[in-house]
Image (tube, rainbow, N blue to C red; front, side):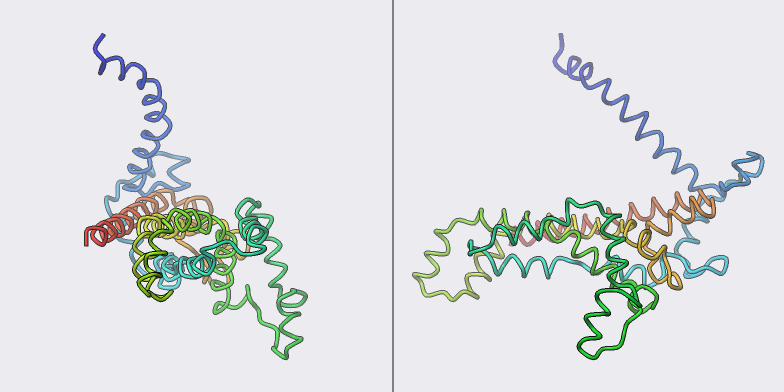
Amino acid sequence: MNRSLAGWIFAGPALVVIGVFFGLPVLAALALSLTDFDLYALADRSNLRFVGLDNYWSCCARRCSGRRWATRPTSWRSACRCRLPCRWARRCCSTHRWPGSRPCSTALFAPVVTTLVAVAVIWRYLFHTSYGLVNWALGHVGIAPVDWLGDPRWAMPTIILFAVWKNFGYNMVILLAGLQGIPQDLYEAARIDGASRWKQFLYITLPQLGPVLLVVGVITVSGYFQLFAEPYVMTRGDPLQSTVSVLYFMFEEGFKWWNLGRASAVAFLLFLIILGVTTLMLRLGRRKELV
């Protein structure tokens, strides 16, 4: 039997399953994004109209129907705040093992394996204005209570802080594995030549960690564009929709307002944005490796 034919026979069932449960829904969502499919069209298909790219154009507007959309500057700023620097600095300070490093690493990784909803509820109480532990601690140093989740100026930074803490350990493990994979002979040779710690970091650690940093950067950026559970559990997009992320906005359009056409358009726009950003990051990373 032809080897290629045998390969298609073995891969055929898996391809059929992927096509039915992934390919067809994607095509259906793409078709919905070109229509004004909503609750009325769900009840009567005669109300369904083809609108072309109107949903995509309207998603790029600042306002629609009196409500702010997720394309507003606040939401995109929340998607662009990368959490990599603080994680990277944490691991650069511990390239070698030190007393208590294992318990500390375990404690830092523990939030990754905890249930997000349960931890988000706990954080919501920690940052409560009246009886939250954070405001209680600030009161002991003479700082007035802050409405962390009720003030538009503080709500999104609080959610970002929670997301940083929750996902800190995941990238920590990846960066730690990259640091431990750097040959120690390079550092020994650099010390013999009189290189300082800063030069060792600049000319050995960073170049050797280039591929790892690229992977961590792509995972972090793409994951942050898909922020949903944190604002959904902690604020439900309030106050004044200051914590509405792109994915949360898509959820509201599809399951709160039943504008399934617009929700599908937001999904494909988000896919194109993530694809463009990750492609740009991969090309820049490869170009730096060639240099």
